[in-house]
Length: 194
Image (cartoon, rainbow, N blue to C red; front, side, top):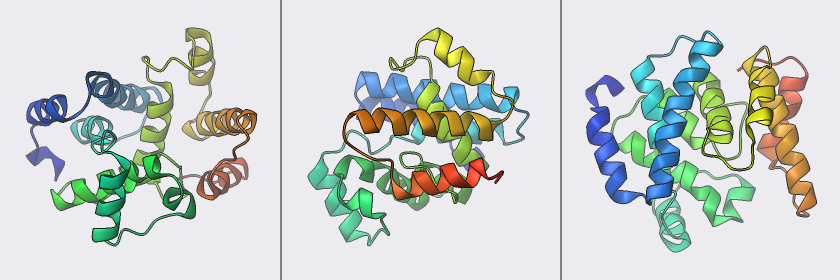
């Protein structure tokens, strides 16, 4: 149970292992997860949810070689897009690190899918996915757009808007949304709930 993990100790650890900018982002994602929970009337343990946001990028500052080596050494199951883009590996690697330390399964699953989105990420994963995109330090959103997103009546509707925005952004760069992300978008558009 994550209640065995002292958030102060976790914050100290992350402040020593992540860049200052990444640490600030991680703290903001944890806080945003909690704010989203209140706004959308979710019922997760607040401490666990905050820890999920705080720890989601635990391996984000690792270099490509280290991420690939860890994934290979631990035989992590990976999506094809993750195999082709080392930076995406920080999600499954981070989840494995947290699992090894005894964090709850739903938290580890949320971290596992926070970069690509998935119909398997659960509601905690949905909160994390959204919080990672909209936290206040993210420069791709201005306050008006952030407010517009937060006006959505459900987490599912909010996630659809984010997935559609990501798809449009990636298309301008000649890229596409991951298979897992598209599957999630279609699932939510058809009324699916995580």
